[in-house]
Image (cartoon, rainbow, N blue to C red; front, side, top):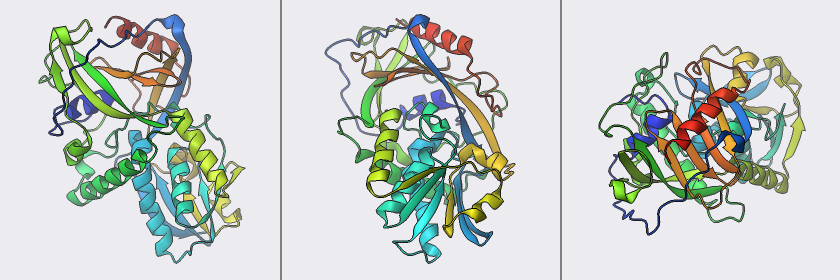
Length: 375
């Protein structure tokens, strides 16, 4: 199956074998108050897609050991912890002993989790970043657990790579579970609905210009409970087809703040600095540098293997009574019940290969209007 975007990934997961759950709800879900005058913020971020998959490798450069750790596409938050363990192994393989200070460049999802993973292994860490949350691309992410979203192309997904990806996804999932139940709710499980105009057996069209993505979700089917088809009497939506599912969601502002607080508590230092060329690494006092610059690696390193993929989200005024996610299959609409508001995500027609950070309000308003039509 071709996995073109988040809508395809989410709906495909519902058909996978998993736990059999009784989803009969005693009360209908609260209606989302979907109107354009409730939009309080629009954010744009860039997914750092690499056709070969994330770059996790080390090299000697400018007298430093440089560990590259970037290029996770739409899977940054989801795959971050398992991927950081791979970067840590490269540091350890270079004979760097716990207690030594290392540098991590970048304060997005990959930089923060890499810094925390290194700290937990006994290293002192200094984070260097041009910007910090919420002024990083990771702050604009949806927050849905999708470790297979734009992570690699089908032609590059060998069996060895896929096996390694599965190990990273499982390791990351396990760490995410350790953040459940905290007062700020950085990680939470939510039920959700996928609604559709046509039967779920109908194939979804792909986005023009995007490559083919491999089907990976069956490798971690046991981590995604199986959904259930609902009759018209079991859901309130104005569509003939609906399924109910359960998924992991990150409340990204709370998650970022918690990671930064934990980093500082364990002695981490955060230095605001912009790197314009690789030679800037040589000026750092640390002999080990972990490059977690994400899309920034395109310019910093001249990495032509990177493709920017624009993503835009809008936030509606929070509705605490709405505790479910909603996906309109085939209509480019995902809504998540985050604590900072109802997050409405929708792709534009030309987002692949696009690094334009200017918000397109008309795009978000159209998505909110599609959402309103479901109630």
